[in-house]
Image 1: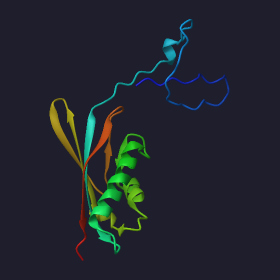
Image 2: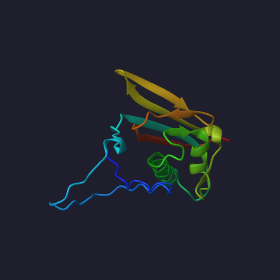
Image 3: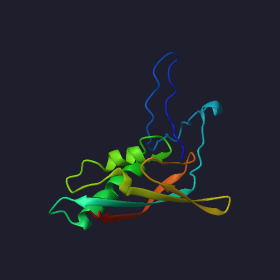
Length: 151
């Protein structure tokens, strides 16, 4: 991934970082100062499996609830609120406020699975836990299991 942004003026505010395809005319060349170049290699995928027990709000179906939860988790992993961190508090906030279901924070858990030095590692998460990703690692939503909470 290569991010290119304008250099801030001395004493001025930092410019907004945007990602876009750049067109450079054939008769011009871009000039980059090596000190301003930062290369980040895309890291390994980190697969997330989530489990959530909910209390449905009639007439909601478990299938509709699962679809909503999957959508919200996908948005969350796509734009982590805390850089490189998946944590219980922000997950609970992301999943709260649904018209289809309610849940207790204690009924949310996840497993993050990734490879490191040839080993397959699993990190268990829940309401008070957090999973910290290495810079460049890519969070991937693999599995969402939603069940009806037993009274």
